Image (cartoon, rainbow, N blue to C red; front, side, top):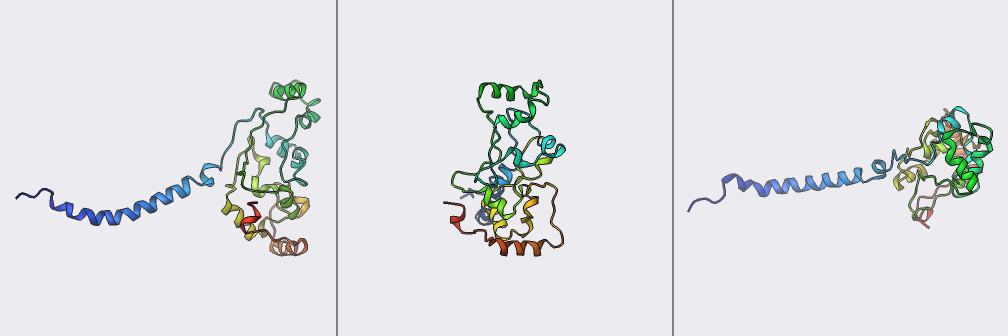
Length: 215
């Protein structure tokens, strides 16, 4: 009786045994990276209703973050500035600018500008801006150098693992309270000593258990 399958097909079971684990590992690696916040979220830069340049306002003009985001030191959330904040300056500065037409319309109608949120944590995550600022975590650590951004974008993954890395070892992120909004501040040679002293004096013990962020 003639052979139905050629002799080389005898090797197929062995090839399948070798290839299957490689395919599984490859699939896990593909999902781990391409489905992670580092790939899906970092670089997110939505189109906003007003072309507001953080580089101009926070960088060139040197406006402090807290002028617009005025509640970050006392609230869990970083407020989106109301139109009144914009008009504090723009009633006198470039009051007829076409770029500011949506702002003037909001001011006249009383309808808030519908800004698009950039840094958006899941609903099951609790994050308190005020607690982090009181501890000495600067805006730069989570948001990147917004003073260089024409359009604000997400610079960090804001994933659970990323947060836990800082909670387990926050030393390089702790800074003096006077520097929390300074976008060009960098740790010096005494940073570790300063951080350890700060943690003792302020009793800083970032939670690393589930209930710290999932309440």
